[in-house]
Length: 80
Length: 391
Image 1 (cartoon, each protein chain N blue to C red):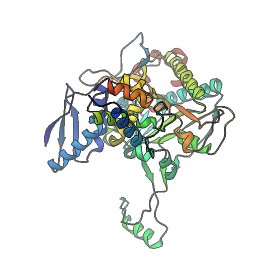
Image 2 (cartoon, rainbow over the protein chains, first blue to last red):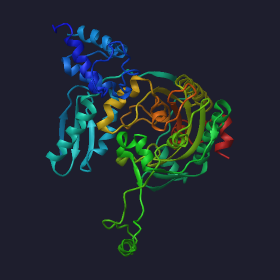
Image 3 (cartoon, chains in turn yellow, green):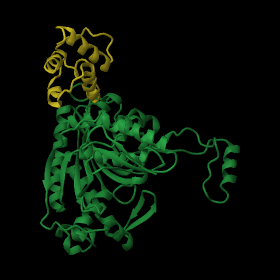
Image 4 (cartoon, one colour):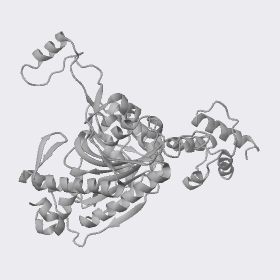
């Protein structure tokens, strides 16, 4: 079991890299695609990066519904 | 030589078909690549250095397969015919009758009823564009500046399909060198006589449309339509009317806000369902993806399919020799999100970068599918089309 806060920080780092952001201190409720600038064509990169980061397999449906860091953290925590 | 490479996992049929199709770009030493019936390995037939070929195939498979995910594909419309019989060797029969004239690799001329059928569907599409969508007809060059194609992302997504246009460098000595080298009539291109290409042959009609609106702020959605020659190099896959290097496409292009563009695409899908009825054609309208270059394939395909960005009209054509059913994409219904709005600084009426969509009909493919389903006897064609096509 990962420590509280660790999952969120690692998710933030993945989003920061995929969205090419300068830092990872954005709102956990910001829309990944419309507000944080994750290009929709980079969705697979985000998904695969999260899977590799946490050594998990994320179902497409769960990923499709998760549009914020907070939602991604919930998905990841449910699989680790 | 022949060898087998296992895949990391069994792949789905759509990916298997794309792997076989895209394999023509792996190496000129690759003669054939077939996915095994259980889709868990590939069988390779090649020549030359086996280790080198094996490494190229492994890299190709890593790109195409390892990051690809099974994606849900939707069939949004399906139509059967009362008479399901299909004619065989249709392209060969067209050539025999002189209706299709093979002039080069992927270069086919049409005449007679084959040409009349192409003109008939194009006429209907143009009428649809103007009557239902209020489209403005435009004519665009076959050439497109290479810089524009690059901005459209074509070199990133489809580098394998680009057709460059070049000319001799403006240098008397070089031109004279070329002239002497080609005195016998066979093309010889001495080193250094060609500059970096400034233009390409356009692979689609719609790129010009977006470029033509560069910098505009639209007060309402804009609809354009055009028919033109398009060019996509498809290597060994170019074997007949179903896959040409030089083909003809009619497009309707929508530029506006997101909601409006989405609605126009849906209206176009409904209109094409009516065309299938009028032409009495069997086929489906279903989820699709573009033939992206392997290195970009997984992410772009995921993007397209996940977002329902592309549907194709697929018409039934003659089965494979082993009896497996086949269909051919003769039209597509595409959304590009706001990519072209951002690229060409086009603003929609909601103040945001414009969203775009396009609908395209491949005229030669439509002709092939229609003759496959109705044959060469005018009496077997829908009555309202007979006089137009067999006059």
